[in-house]
Image (tube, rainbow, N blue to C red; front, side, top):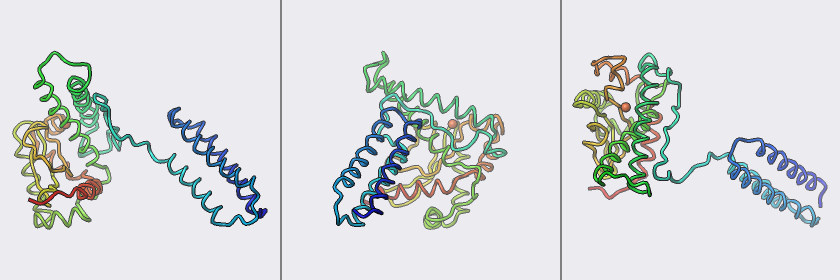
Length: 290
Ligand SMILES: [Fe+2]
């Protein structure tokens, strides 16, 4: 075998050793660690086998393939572990993608902290309890209808708040751009028309609820809708892109009963990149149009 190739392959083996040491020190779970180390060892064995054959005509492509295998293993290890489901009753409060004081002066730290750690947490707990009663051995004494009501209320609360947190950012561009702007103009005429109607809808909510910008795969259009509480006034088969919490807990400490000023302030923290991201994913859903 060409000496250069031999050296290169030996270098790859050494690199594999370093990766294994790094894995040992990493904070991933023992199970993931073991699996990742095993992948690297299998790859190293392939290299040893090549080295032992001492083939005369070992070509560059073969070496390249081995190197690419190694890179793929690394990529797989680095990829954040994505579960494909949450077991019933095991929902968790998502981490905020910014600090509690990051949205000031538009939304105060005190509100964000309470809203996230107390209110949203209560919806997560409520949904978990309802799912345990509905789908696991921990059956409650209450009738089925009670738990279905609980699942609708807390489930809608958990999912809507999760969208809400990621719909906001301290570095808002303050107005939409890209595909969502194109669609807003197509369906509502202009960004100002849309903003006006969305604001009006948010102000119109009786008691506690939400305003939402929805994508409707069934009509290929955007829609604006208010929700009462979290779960009433919903439009099935649509996908929320942008939601605004107008429950009193979202603004009372800062704006008292002046919901309109809370809504006006909120427009300054909308994360339009997140809305665009949700829109591009939502548009992959293709229903027949009716
Ligand atoms: Fe809320």
